[in-house]
Image (cartoon, rainbow, N blue to C red):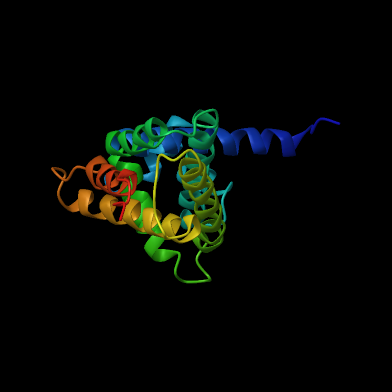
Length: 193
């Protein structure tokens, strides 16, 4: 049965707010955007906007959750090296969301922070998906390593997160190249004795 009444309208408004915040942060940056701008875009006052969220941090956490969900939908059909490159390029084109991700990841170390649950769910899921991808590539003979895919996945996520942080400090940093370099190392066939 479909949801009706105030609950349905509230969920629709909440989704509208999240879409607006995602769009504004992506185009204008996380640090330079006030939540008042998001409220204005949604025809709300700032208190009206905050009615839909427990706190500013909750709203920002939900923006990241939406970013991950929309990216997962966009890239669901693809699980090849080009898909991972596209994800990195998307990050480079939305610096505000990279800023938000890095800031919230640091804050999420506090178990009481609203982003803690998101990151606690996110990393195991990302490790599993990355390990599955690496395992498939190993089974195809495209990648070679004595390190199990599960451990390689941890390294890849650390690399991806770390390169984003470096890129925020120095935008001339190439976010794709380090991942390409590691893939090249794994693509090299071991020397035959």
